[in-house]
View 1: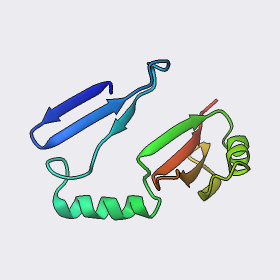
View 2 (view 1 turned 90 degrees about the vertical axis):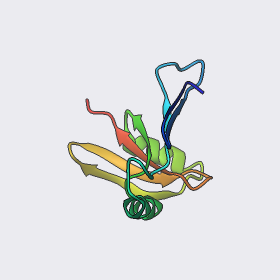
View 3 (view 1 turned 45 degrees about the vertical axis):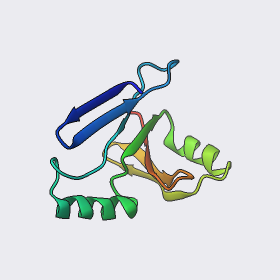
Length: 106
């Protein structure tokens, strides 16, 4: 673990691999005090459907990465799509977490 911050009932954690100090993964749970209970439940439902995945990775070529990892058995929730001047695709990891793979802007 890299960071563990508590502010009342809210907790923010980041983890990182010792060999990749510039990469940190932030962990959070939607809920009070940042979001009221109803909004948090709505957000959980939207994330469960594959929208707004909490995990994002940047790749040089989204279509090539899609082909490469799909060939290894990764199941995608969204094929690569051109939008906002770049390309992105969505998938779930073996634990069911939603990911968005976004092509870096050149």
